[in-house]
View 1 (cartoon, rainbow, N blue to C red):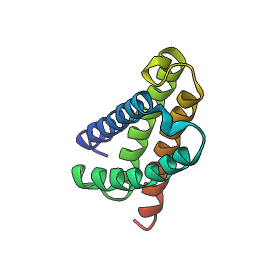
View 2: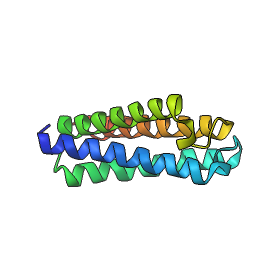
View 3: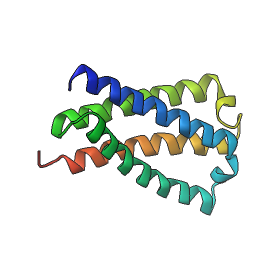
Length: 124
């Protein structure tokens, strides 16, 4: 992974975390534990597929470089998610079930993106 690819991976991770946190903050009803929450986890799969494609295109990366970009972005997002949830829960939906489910969604989507990159690049 080049430095440019690293910065792109980092920016994708931070940007996606910020989008996820805003969705949880402004649309907490999507994380009530019901059908909407399940649908959001499905949206996470689509978002992850798009993110892997964006990393591949923007970073002009394949194989190990793409996986490294996704790992860096996922790591950045997970660090922000943990810090935000532990110390600034109002970034999400305050201290509530929606915040917990929303933070779990962000972590799950990050892991999904990393696994998709690993799976898609397994032959390279």
